Length: 95
Image 1 (tube, rainbow, N blue to C red):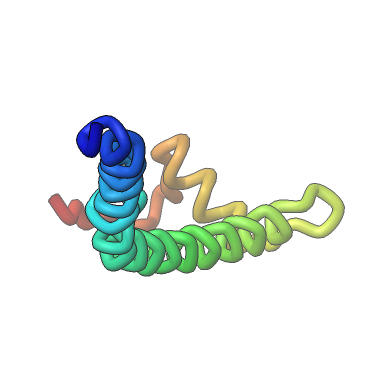
Image 2: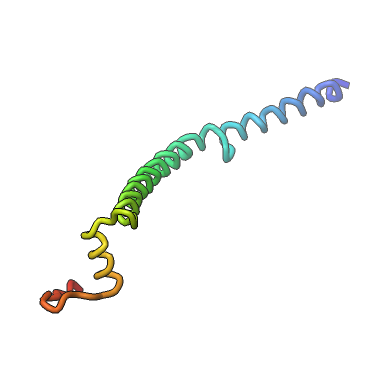
């Protein structure tokens, strides 16, 4: 008789203990908080790098605007992509 009355509270305590332990040690628990903070810091650093790259690319695109292209940048890109040079220039391979 005593065991029957204690079964429901014991089951409830077991379920609460399970969920409490999972809240602390589970994949989204308190122990995982430090790992999440490390991931956020790494992703913020990567975001800053990508943002700097985007700013650099945005600047290059602005310099290549057909209405007012930067002649030096256009010359550099043509030489690089088409592999051309003036007859009086000396080419020094870097490889």
